[in-house]
Length: 510
DNA sequence: CGCGTTTGACCAGCGC
DNA sequence: GCGCTGGTCAAACGCG
Image (tube, rainbow, N blue to C red):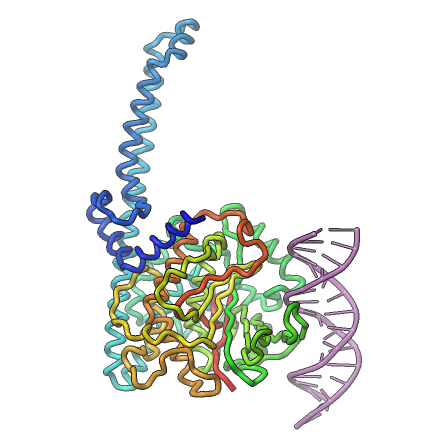
């Protein structure tokens, strides 16, 4: 356990240092010769591939050759009357077969390396475009900003596509009004040039973050199906999981939860909701209300609203599902932004929650404010955005151009939304915005914060990477039953995904 | 009268 | 198998 924590801290440090990209991209060129000098003992797949394969080949060859002097074998062959030369031929042919096989593996590892290199380059390009765009935005006219915003949102789309485990194109097919717009954006997106590469990468088993099945047809196409815990849904999900076959990761839904101080019984998030139930939840004197989106017939998005038991001024809103309809402007920004966070969570959700929630993982972080939590507790992984805490203001005093530390698309998300670093006087420190005040800018603020805080993204990335890098274990081994939460410094998400089966909507206050 | 809310019943999953 | 809990349904009700 302690060892695991140490390993995770190392990973975090490594990711945070920005070495991740550099090393991987360098490795593609230099064939990873410097592994001995590495201060951090991270797993170097390709390095191992090269060196170990050769080593393995030698070992195997020697083993095979040694097999020729295996006394037991010799005794047997002599006693059976089989000639030794025949046996040697056999082992020789086996050796050559193995060598051929090793050659193939070698080629494969080379291909993988080049693919990784390509991804790294694409990511770097994208990041460069982001920085440029943000700089332009900081100095540009409103119109320029707007066009930049469009451009950036298309970049973000690319990023989302990269993250989005579902087949590309699936999401908008049933949503003409939005898809057309997005298609246009994509067509002019500079980042779109990466899409082809990205989609190719996604096909690769190593790079497939979460090969979730495209279930969201039910969001757009089959609108009658229920999401999130409907009495029918478990069966449906189960059936679908069975259909996926053993290779496919079971589909899981992510939730995005928002904690905010509000006297109002409900936060208005730009969508229309209809209450369909209310229930007393265990351990909370306040009832939990259930709402579903009524902006479109059959929209599968639901939300739960409940007051915090400890502090009843805190309103907890939990979203799940994708809108299958265009969102009003007030709802789109946050929806897009948070879909990234939620999809990232989904991507990581395919692996053990134990890894995600290893205690103390993020506690080594020097920033204390808990702005967001990842909760992988069953049945759904949840990202919680806590807008009730004071953030550490130092978070926003760091250099804006810190190198990205992990090639995850969260970086690609919403820098167009007035990065705090570029417009400091206008913006509050962070989501410490009191509800009811300047809620129009809050969406932007939160969004910008998500994008701007490299520490948060690094932390989240590290969390996800640790999940992805860890084989799935039996769920509930270490954290059975409890709420497993990892504190992350920064903000993750708000509900929001017009595309992904996990979250939705924007967030503002009444 | 139409629409949204309320509320008790029902169902499924899960733990013991 | 039973009870608990979370989530949803749908009839009853209220309001404009």
